[in-house]
Length: 285
Image 1 (cartoon, rainbow, N blue to C red):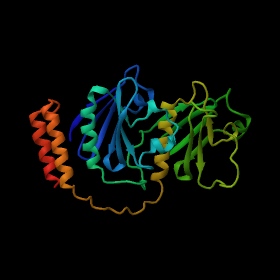
Image 2: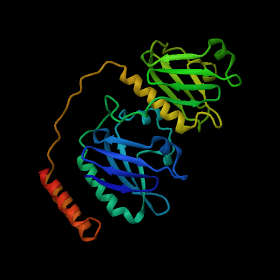
Image 3: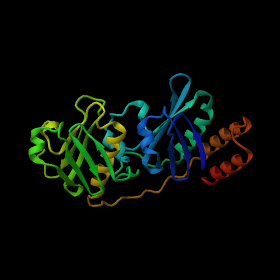
Image 4: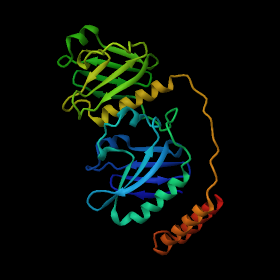
């Protein structure tokens, strides 16, 4: 598609096989968006698109990622606040018609559904680090290291000493938002006893504890996502079956062209854009 739709805090660039999301760096932009910078979302990572009224005269365009396709959302595990959802684009209500057009165009290009068997969206780049209440966490892409602080770490952690965890020895990551009670980042070893109750995070040498001003979302969540992606990548690859996409329904193509014509007559699409997009639609028959 090659077009750009700009909203509050972000702009979406629609390409033939992906959506490139560029986040603003303004003072009102959520810090998580600023930390992410930009993200390329392959269309194979998306299951759907919604458009709904937002607050105070806005519309919200949201891409719905497939479960397991994005390490950031997998690590977040539903704990992100609505305003920090990286898949939401908030627009002025007067751009509803244009947003509806792009939502329809995007839906027409989605061919996958259901959980993904691997991460399809790139994880935040390493090295990464953040300061927790009881220590400093760092990740270089191959191993996570915890270095305990003099004042915050428990005696159990001091006795265990500073820790290093190669990703090959981990099975996953447990992230609990610092905005919730008992926020922490816990590493899950492969050989851990799944029956035994894990120790409290402040007593567990495989965990760091958050707190007021420590382990903020925009630092600790990208960290957790990068670790999770590295853990998944270290696992043996499994064969992926590929299914050819079905051809478009001619009636659906006709409806898209009619909608495109309405945008053209309203002046929202130029003559050149109208010709190019119409040709693209006809080519899908």
